[in-house]
Image 1 (cartoon, rainbow, N blue to C red):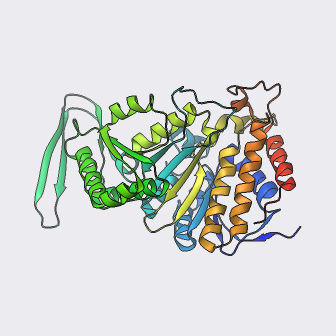
Image 2: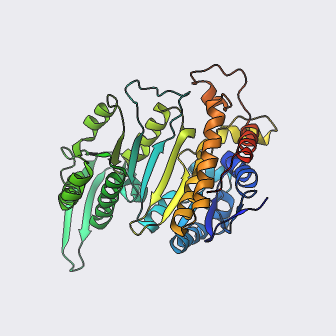
Image 3: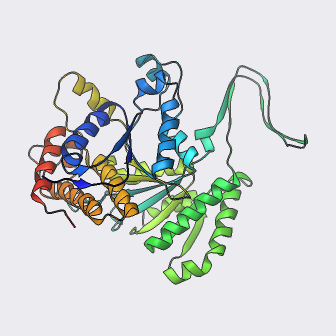
Length: 404
């Protein structure tokens, strides 16, 4: 078989646990047999991040900046238990958070809609895309465990030496303090990215915050969004795109009754939580795409779910697993399609579309893993195994004509 040539290297970021196992299967069975592609590989597995003092994550982000497109496997963000389990030097930062900060990117997450897996929310008829601000908030926080009575203060010292101080709390006993921040530049990049996406997709855009409580921090997001919306008013009007702002709790209530087909812009933590809610509501975290987009047009694709720890432990015991690889497959196809689009190679783009079609056809025909079998609208007598599903997709892909 003559392979399709990919002109520019694709940055590959390997990950952890069960998704790492699936990742290699996808690459070896679905990608490399058909594409002649140079993969610039970075191992973001927990062991290698620890051994390199997380330098590998920074190197991977720099590679995405150089080449423009990356594809990432799910990774562990270690807590105290993971430090013990993996014998780590420390609780390393989230690799996604590090990459998002370095690219100053916005994360867009969109469900993969499959007819045999109806949404849990009856009102939802069209995909709802989450745009998650990819900088700051609790992901770049500072925390203190308060040992006892005392006063916690927020202190800012300007470059001119002038200080601003505000009391956070008067503690009468032990507690905790958290400090978060954001920047006008990052908020503005986020707003501009969301508007650009909404205009290109011709989709209504929502934004919600809690400015009634956070009259400075959240209100800053509200005001900057309003400024950017005003700046692009003519473009929005030409595209037939409307902008809607409300309190975040009102937005959550409204989205449960909305038919979908909207872009929902969220602050960092809100986007983290709501994207998981939407993924589950549309069927499964295994049916959710995720792409990080920088203001200067760099892209990183990955699945929206985690490393599937429970299945990994079963895998290590030699037990059969049934882990959904659709979102990981779509991470690869998203990156490949974008690489082909940027390189001007339609045959590469067509391959990505054909691989997506092969994966969806398998699910539509009743070949699916256990998470989908439990919620499918058709009877599934025996869910596919992890490798069995990928093998079936490979066979279906080989039967397709995917050259443009």
